[in-house]
Image 1: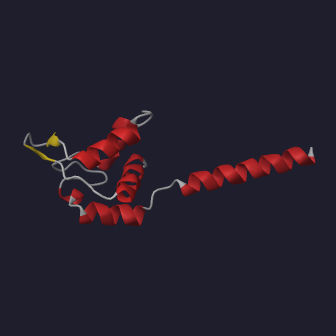
Image 2: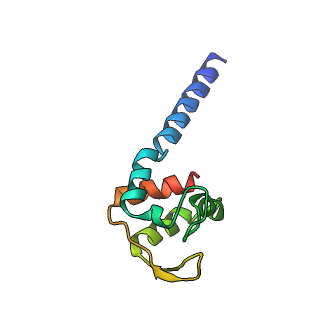
Image 3: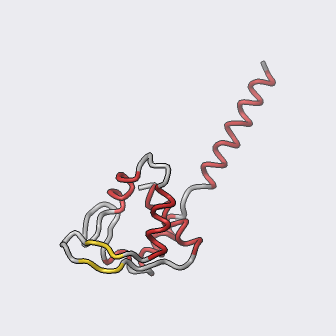
Length: 109
């Protein structure tokens, strides 16, 4: 019984450390959002010219390809239709680590 409790405690500790390590860096994500001009069209919880980050997260919740889809979107600069009906090219983010953190941050909203 003691061995089982020790094993369960170890599994819980590893699980906690893995999930904590995967958490996005919110400060870095917010800085990247500002530095890349994302806040011109997006906010966390309100639609502007583009959708709120919470809406993007909700639309992608539970989808296995969500990270890949958002990564492609953020790195390729596709043409997007804005909330006001206008179209423009979405700015591409070049740094892979920044993109990974932004995607995780957006999906965590």
